[in-house]
Figure (cartoon, rainbow, N blue to C red):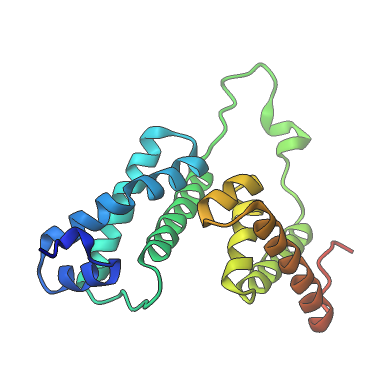
Length: 197
């Protein structure tokens, strides 16, 4: 007899969209370990990883119910991309909320050059460089963009990248090499200056 557990991810997605609640439970159980491992490798905090894991599947369910899942590719890649975006959102919020207290030290932190404001010109140049680099990264093929993001924005090792993307370390290294070659070509073609003059 044919069992629901044997269905492909896309078949289960279709069943869930058509009202079968059990289908989403099978999908979550099927991919729980991989998604949680991906999150914990990046955030390195069990409680935070659990929160992001829950938020990921809440977003998955909402997106499926509102018809926002249009991918014909791998369901798991889509889920990992959602968790990846939620991780980035978390770190952005954390960065915005981080504050420094002057009461915890005898040194006046706010008169320290370390905490002094950089001049507006430096700030604008840095923001422009960052913006240019992000736009260039967006133009890379998916596999190259993914390895750049995981390596340079999340600080993962090539072994972790290889494990999370189901490829060999050599393939992960190759993708990084091609990504850097392509970025250099785009920088030259667009005649961009990515350094402070």
